[in-house]
Image (tube, rainbow, N blue to C red):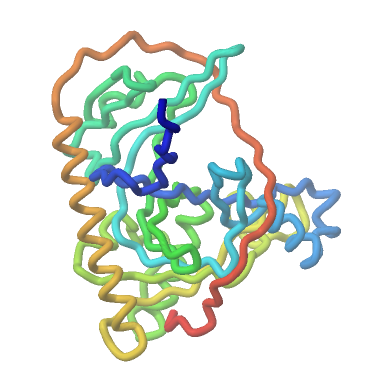
Length: 293
């Protein structure tokens, strides 16, 4: 009998049209009022490295969350979906849906594992969603420091920070716009590639107002942004983003066709949602000082 000469297949040995976007999350480090004054710059950085504040991702190999240094990204598309994780005793339920471009015309198809739970236009099914399944807006982007496509599940603070950055960029060239009037859904509809760079944490209330020392303190992100032009030192970056955008859109069309087949929804089960906690070391490398935004 001969020895087994087969080795384990490395990652990427089998090609697939199914693209997995690395999920990037943001945490605002909710701080009770009695501890707000103790939140120094050093304390914030320590918590950032532990992924308790700022942008981070989950590393499946190390099973740890990893903080992202010099976070900067180029928006490729904006999609919506419903997802959630629920634990009921020893049983876990993972709700997910294929992402959609327009919730007004495209149906949401919510699954638990491989079972279709509910299907329909979001406004018609939102009251039928099981506990723990929540609506999310997702920014699909090219992350410069990680050199890969990511999915940012937008929180209210991140959405607000992006709107403010766009309003500031518009104001700098004489176009006055209110941040609240800026919609992120159509940011990729006119062939422009918007880039965002995290600059600092700002101290705010839950509602996004400047923190005055009363109530809970949140450390929300602030961005600088601009349009990546196919000129000079950003020419290669722009070309790369255009190619990646085409890939993302083709993946979207492929999945839309795949999941468009009708199926009978399974009975909906309701359980209370439960949030996950993470901790991890930081990652370093990319320096965003040379970016034009």
